[in-house]
Image 1 (cartoon, rainbow, N blue to C red):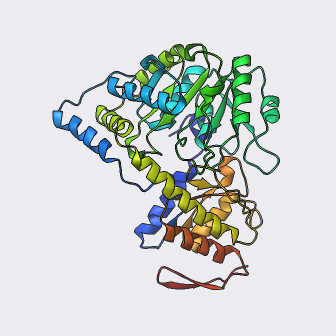
Image 2 (cartoon, rainbow, N blue to C red):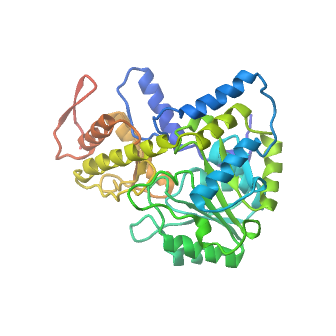
Length: 406
């Protein structure tokens, strides 16, 4: 049996790989702490449950239009006006049945020709590069060289060539929690509109920010109407509404690209589930206090993780401004983040995600959308496993463990 060359070239998702390892250990009864989680633990909003339940009670569960049901399109229009100060029409929206990830894939299928280049800012979400490859494009990585998580505008423009089709931006950023400066976003909008390059904003975390550092609306700096613009905004209900299992996302673009994305979607998924779309309507139009509650919880958890990490010899950490991730530098202990993640899972039973998969080798992505006790104990276990100046013994679960390596 053989598989295609393309399939052979696509990497495994590191988050899913370590999730599977953790699942196996937990099934064996091991006291695993999961600091690699990519989803909040909050319950689904009540309004979302009521909305999808009402749809189920009709027993009228059939195909919908490819672009999404009218109530959801209307809700996304209202959401965009409220959060982005931008008026859009339903014709500018495609709802996707695979969350924001599917929306990005549909977009790339619609705009990328073979050998087109997409500039991706590191650190980047692991799927960006693989999605670009799957549509026969070429990912071009721009990595900050000053130790920060925000690339310089000059370095981004130097990476642009005659083959550049798009620039991909994720702010607040997974995995670093960095929010790109208003100045950088303004320059990118002007540059892309001048050069006729697509500017893709993955805004899935845009409501999960801390303090006064709020991500700016990309439309603030655009001088073009949405139907004359190559700005594309990706969003969804997975993160801010803690609805990862509903898999509803969307893309907002000019009508020409939206029509192309609808054609792509019609041939691969037909349409999103009406039940799940109804839940999204409930989330977007219902009481919004759950989003603020999640944001405040994450900010408190972030503060606790920063406190624990700053007491860790040899670890360098930049405080995240949003999301539920941080990306500490563990290179003092290992330059191979994959080996380090495997070591910590084996010795300390703590799940982390290798930073090399995000374009930042020597780093680990840690998630603080877990319980406070898991944050404190998880960092304590990591410190015990790595810092030889820490106590030689620790309890992991009910077992007393002794460090017997150097």
